[in-house]
Image (cartoon, rainbow, N blue to C red; front, side):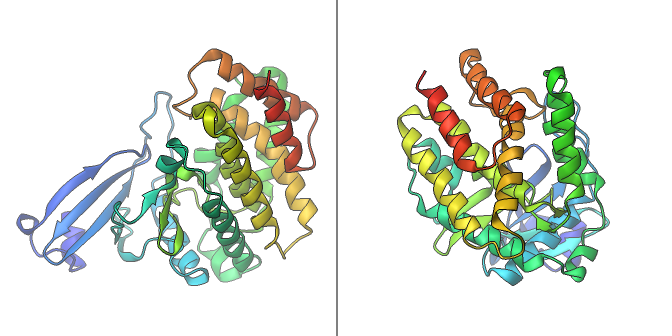
Length: 327
């Protein structure tokens, strides 16, 4: 890493810089580097993720994260951190450091019950603009030639692994996995979540695009909407705010869909979301804040019901969840 930074001219000597390991992620090592005249971050992908269950993923995803940042910033200025360098052999890259005193982590804001819907509205709009701007773009598609990485780091650990706990739903969950893998419309991020979004002066900034590929835009939308539902269990006093975030993000996103019939995309999103909802309880990457079995059972009841009776509209999901929360 030090040699790569020296070759790129970002540091002259390791003795002139300080390196601080940043925590919070499970898939990469990330350092904050203080060098004379500049502060930046370095990110290097791990082959084995830092979770309890075995979860392996190709480290080449580091290069696809760089590609996502580059394309996204070209479509929506400031949508991602600015890139400083990339080393394809070492599978690492450097990017600007965004000061947390200015750029607030959205997950932290939501944890505190601060559910201003404006970030959800802006996130939905920006995400749709990035998706729409890459539909049918062959040059962008050529930057994401792999499909196995998305399967390894998203479809298998979330949808397919969940079938181990729910064998009666195996055909449904594997069917969702297969349909999502086969729908390749645009460049997707693959991990749109409040933990990967900073709220800055110019709006949301997307981080951690390690799962980026050409895929189904419904996955990105469903993946983020899922978090608003789950956080109703984390901060019960803010349920109405989370549900409003859910509605605002969905409506803002759909208002900017111009590449396919809106109802087609909403139906795919609504049918995928229950699988992701269940996966964050019984898959390889459960959310850390839902530990009570009674709360987990609430998720299971709603998710299983929606999987066996697939919805066409996102409002059906939020309505089913509200009904469960009230019991």
